[in-house]
Image (cartoon, rainbow, N blue to C red; front, side, top):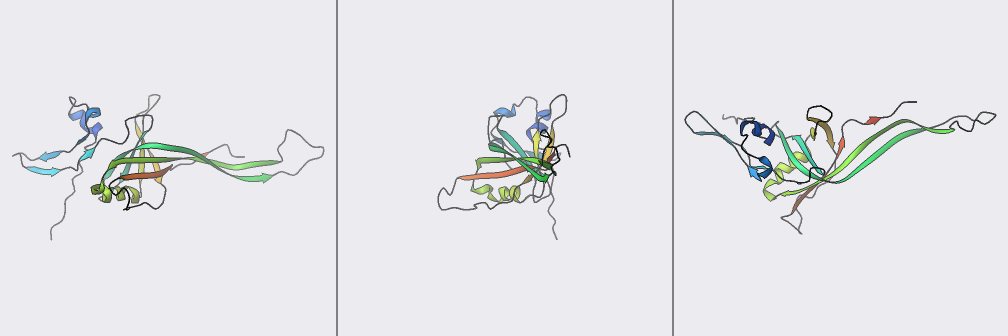
Length: 193
């Protein structure tokens, strides 16, 4: 029995920029790596990495996800829409006599909220359908967060919202637009009353 071997090669632009400081990855469209042994024979080859999916940093979101091989992949998306959703429970306080006008009679409690992002990518083709399905089926995903106020760059956990995706359509068969919705994994909670 022959077992497949998976090599985890950290081949993202940030990892490679340290090894190849002379390459400006902002000017690279796609690339792949070959790992050679001591005599120059190819031991492993990465997939073709596309650096695509929105040039405007204000609207670019990079999603990292757990693929079917148990490794982390990433894909860039363009922000189409961001919504803020708030949920709460209502309560009613009994009226006092005499009426205290500034006091609430109806109110909200257990207020929590979350942001939903609708993201789109049109940079992949029919050959990438199975890989894109791995993104949609992934149980774990993160969004890149650029550090601020002296904090390092990091990853924020997100949930890919369940929905149905067109796999093949009669019209525009070779235009693979991937539109996903994500929510932050942690809801925001306000002051509890």
